[in-house]
Length: 256
Image (cartoon, rainbow, N blue to C red):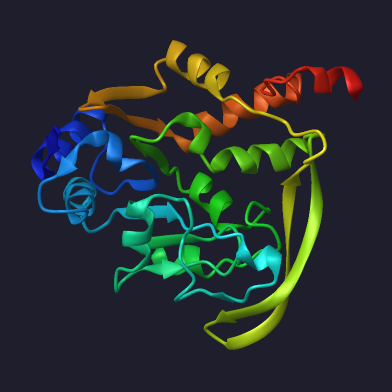
């Protein structure tokens, strides 16, 4: 199996245009980047080397067990199916985490305290940590992950009020810095009867055509860089034109 080391990744990040002080929303599938020489820590070390002490790393730490009645503990509830790097960051001693029990993020760096303090009914509401990252001109970094993993897409879906999702509330026990509390949160859930299958490839193609989606091959996968502002602006325009435009199973459109 091909290997990857800290210097390789750091050089790749520099070549993509990531700079000191950047805030990064990181989605990962690091198994495609090769066997890490030094373990998972090298991914954190390489990113930190490039963005420096004034940079910020954010990873999704979603877990949907709260929807089935399980309590959410922001210190102990693991991230599920978010990749081993997200779970690694969540467990770092200096990591902070948002309170949303299903769509939380873990943060380290300059904006960790600010972002983790934002508590909204939906993870993508106005005033949420996701919106604040947009305001702070965060960048998207995909470490082996593909475009369909980009959580910021849900922010755009909510703003566009796409017809293949609907609002649902969930109540349960949440442990925050104030202790255990009964809380209600909401999520713009996918309509399972419609079962929409989505692709973000048209968004990626549009961004690439304007030089705004930059990828470099690395072993078995790709490392990709894009401004969140550019991703959201492009997606917003696409969904405004036709909210079904990214749904692969187009028969849904005829039934609407």
